[in-house]
Image: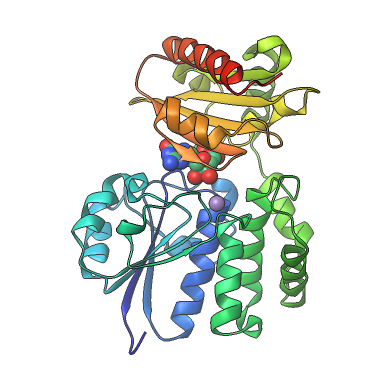
Length: 328
Ligand code: 5GP
Ligand code: MN
């Protein structure tokens, strides 16, 4: 990259373990090479990621819009992590579109718009952006450069995006990478506990409410959905990230093929979709019905009508999609 540069690393709205883990690890590599690096997120990350080394330096654009704008405007190079389209950057989308700095994508989502980038490290066949980042590190400076902090951050991204090694993309090569992270000082129980056993009591109660009272099963047990209104979330003292993972629970019912979660925000309904196996491609479903996207088994989008209408639209969409795809 020739000489020290000011580099911005940006990642998606509602940043998750993979978005933050990959950004922090890559930032550490770039800083090691002498660059001046800032990590930016559109809105705040969930508190179960607070333990990550380096997270305190991440700039939250929603909270410091001016500083975020300055960093993007003055960056000489921009890395975009864990998203395909830059329209997932909320208030950072515009400054980034205006920036003349070369833009490099590091990601694992399907079908990135290649015209938005100068260079792409796009690997939809890999489980997570953190694993793509691991591969980048391996190729550029070797795995000896991985510090314990980097190993933990990368592992957190891999662990959360694979549902704790339960979903697809679990290859021998991935497990070898995890073995290397262990050699570099990773403590798996520590990361596991920090991420999964750090909930508030009200979050666990909200899960009980969501499953017990708000889960509906449709299509003869093949599809399900959970909805949470703003009022319901407020009743349980909702904190950002509290409903993370709820959408996976209906898939633990035998015969269930697809699950959706609708959470109401002031501006729109956030739609989260999950499926199991090869039959239902929720990336296609999210693109067609909810203006979103993602992966075959995990995708999301937005709905700009009421919660009740969103649910009606979902039911109709599932009926149409299942009939069309001959899902039995
Ligand atoms: P989650 O349900 O965890 O928010 O998102 C699941 C997956 O869908 C993630 O890989 C995420 O990148 C993708 N996704 C979520 N929301 C959107 C969206 O609004 N647009 C697109 N293109 N992808 C989304
Ligand atoms: Mn990811």
